[in-house]
Length: 124
Image (cartoon, rainbow, N blue to C red; front, top):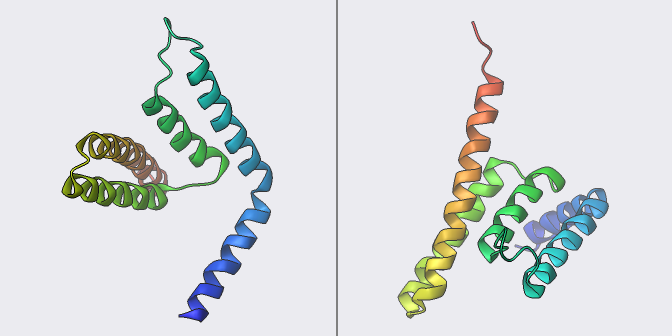
């Protein structure tokens, strides 16, 4: 078990070294979006909701952090399991939100999957 832990730890350390600037940009944009939402910017024209912020984070993760469809499908599965857990516990409001986030991740993962499979196949 410790062997797998060290392998994963080394992989994450190397990945974070390679993506340090992208991680900084990702976190800065996320913080700015949350601050703009709490300040009420764009309120009458563009409702800056948490759902929109989560969707923007998924899209930024694809471009900045190099997430591919497998990572987004994994996030979808984790969010779906978390939503099921919240539903079982009885926290239905947060279960619905987690289900919406999982749907957003699934939609983006499906789009990336279709694009990647379309690019792999050569037209004949």
